[in-house]
Amino acid sequence: MKEIFVYRHVPFEDLGRIEPVLRSAGLPLSYVDLFDGPKRFPTIDSAAAVVLMGGPMSANDDLAWLISELKLVAEACRRQLPVLGICLGAQLVARALGARVYRNPVKEIGWFPIFFTEAAASDPLFYGLQGPETVFHWHGETFDLPEGAVWLARSEACPHQAFRWGRAVYGLQFHLEVTPEMIADWVRQELNRGDVSGLEKLPDPNAHSARMQALAELVFRRWVGLLHAGH
Image 1 (spheres, rainbow, N blue to C red):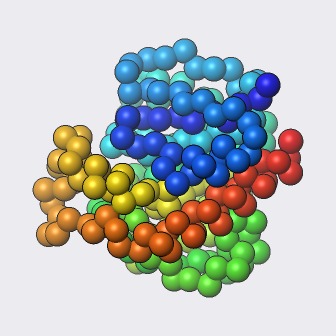
Image 2: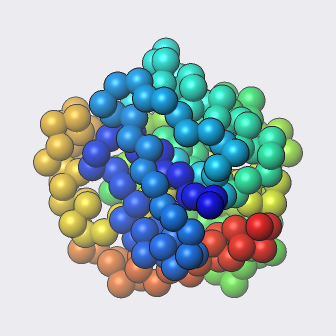
Image 3: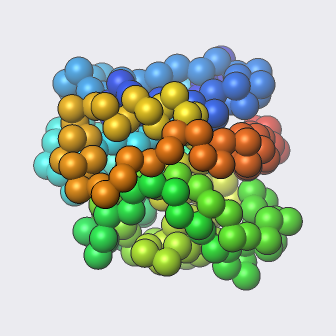
């Protein structure tokens, strides 16, 4: 039976608000954990969809497992499988499609508004959302749009916040999946200490929580709908 594969780069960046929505798809859900060292990647032939989570590493790092992951993402895109990349995951999708990943002028950590492009008005995930929407961010790098991608959202500090490539390949630079508990945990993580030390004030984990829940359910259920529509 086909499965939804979730690639996790650190143990504390998991599906969050995405998980109950994915489980409603009626397909098995399997984590592929990469943080314990090189792993044998499951064959793409058994994937119904691929979800790529965030992490503190760079999409440009010369790591054997990351290079294998990029090849898998490129193959998933070539086969037109549904792919959802979050933060680092979005950067991996962009790089797998041939785009450049590089340092953003500023680190964007905390609650900031995103603004939708004109193309978002007819996008399968974002139609009907007028914006701006205040969502959670935690990233220091950004990416160019892959060739053929549809630009969907921007923020004041980072032009490329969301894109679609093909029918159901999405990259979201922002973290729509986070729960208050995840945010509170992230600021305590040793791997995030360098980012946290540069903040004037820690983000409030509970800010905008109700709206984030509504947005997450809307956007991720629409993505699951694309999964069903294509398979």
